[in-house]
Length: 142
Image 1: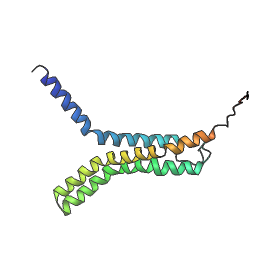
Image 2 (image 1 turned 90 degrees about the horizontal axis):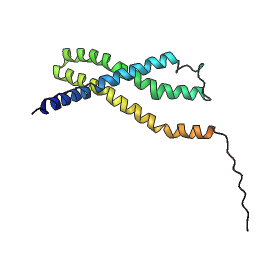
Image 3 (image 1 turned 180 degrees about the horizontal axis):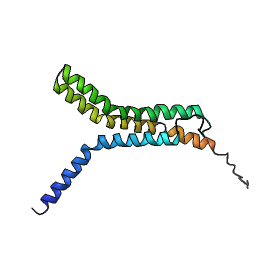
Image 4 (image 1 turned 135 degrees about the vertical axis):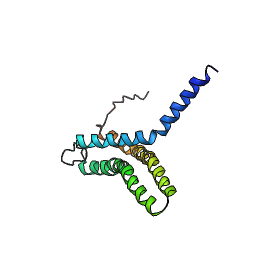
C-alpha cells in the first residue's frame, strides 16, 4: 500500500503531460516562428545558400507554413466554435474544439515526416559539395 500512492501520483502526472502534448507542440511552433523572424530565414537577400530561391521555397513550404497553420489553429477554432454553437449544436462545437486541440500533433507529425523525407537530399548535397578525393594506389604485379 505504501507504493500505491506514489505510483498513482506518478501515473496522474504522466497522463497530464500526455494531455498537454498538443499545447506544448503549439508553443514549440510559435518558438520556431519567432526564431524564423529573428534570423530572417525567409529573406532571399540575406540567404547564404548557393540556391537562395530553392532554400526560400523549402523554408516557406516545408517549415514556415506548417508552423503558421499550427499557430492559426487555436484562434480559428475559437471563432468556428462560436459560430457553430449558435447555428448548430454544442456537441458539434465541442468536436471542433477537440479536433483543433489535437491538430498541432497532426501538423507536427507532418512537419517531422517532411523533414525526414528531405534528409537524403540534404545528405546528397553535402556529399556533392565535398571536393573529389584521390587515392594513389601502387599496385605491383608479381
